[in-house]
Image 1 (cartoon, one colour):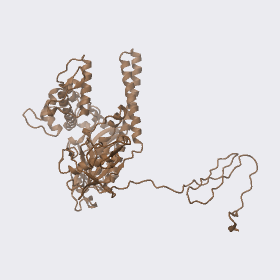
Image 2: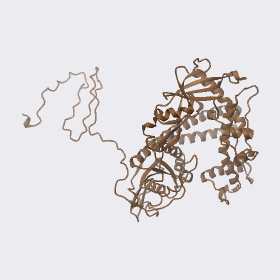
Image 3: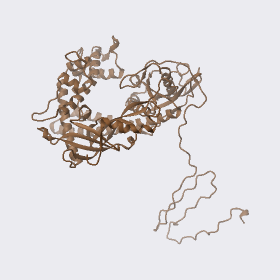
Image 4: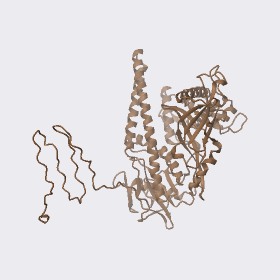
Length: 626
């Protein structure tokens, strides 16, 4: 590869693992952690001839590849959109009663679910692996929804629009999910005239989903794509086979292209042990790599945790935190917490949310009008609807960027707070049982749309890098019960304050809730449920009294330092003209300042002769100066 020596991705861990001398592997137990990042190619070379290729040409050829993948995926999903498909996926067995493999393309090959392409178009078999892997991942995600719809449809009453209580233990689903399915069942009942529906499936309520235009290269092998890391560990080299035309008819119209991208600066020097193949997508700037990597991080010891930080999700801000310590005398806490400052981003998100809902309502109204409008008016309405949809998409993209920034900033603040306090575990509320109720339609919707789940993922990622374990604990009663006596709290100062007359403790209700959550994590650390792809969870909320400790156990949050002397701008040079604008220096703001403020000088505001300047000798202020 010219003057670059490449290391295969499977061996990159040997090269990257040398950075473990920075304190990761020196007598400290480690655990692998996978994270994601994005990068872009800055050099493209034809692998056979070594000639440079323009990045615009690469974007075009990747677009042709993504069109083939998206078209074949949409055709395969529409062909498999029937109840029998979800029955097979729910059972997890093939025709020979063998367990389906976890790899999507292998399971699709065993079931005979192969994609099809237009006549005369040649597509390598490894591209078909990418298509089937993405389709199976989508259908497996919807299998749970199909099972829930089948169970909820039998309990739905079209006359009242309500769901009856479940009779079997396995029929229970999260309430938020049940409300969404109930809306779908109610809409179908209205369209069918209120007739009893019976047992329905997901194929009866909605159409096939759209397949994203992306290439998940991890489902292929070296025949289609391979990734290498340079010896210096500052560049990624991806060799991928791309079509040379929109509809290739032979193998010769698929050529290998070598793409070189820079590794982000924050990853250099980290103990990365694996670099999987990336996902290729196209955005407004061109080709984007969605990469993943696996690094070694300190392993958290949950069994010996003695200090915990509880994070409570607040309706006024994203969250608040408090500390509980397991001492030889029992659980103690100073009942003082840390409230996250979102820097005004929450207000901006609420404004963008209201704007997006307004655009959606206006587009829906114009759609209803266009259904019965004349052809010429319909064309005008459809043009307006397209503009509204474009604006709504832009608002959604902006909300996504703000939510990501807010989530990772919150995660860094809470992780630093826990690290300073010496905590080994961070307890967060179980989002599957957390619902916002009783605050009005606007506030409930605003809290439901907040980036809580994204903040939990960011917090788990950031805290794992610091050796802190994030645990999910039950949310019920955390803000309503006293951490000391487990009795209902009073609200003497309104919603945001809490007070226990028996224990005589109180303060911010979010801080008290954080103390409760941290207590549940410490008491249930030996009974933690671990599931793949989920946070360690404490299912049962145990109680033990928490004694109020007057010793300071939490870190002091940083505060802006008061500047006693205000710096003034330097004196601007004198400008020519009748009424020039002269800068007047501001007086010093120190309380010990004894210097008289400088009087304004400059033009007198007229064409008269200027007064004489003050003498250079200072005027005596007291008889002692004489």
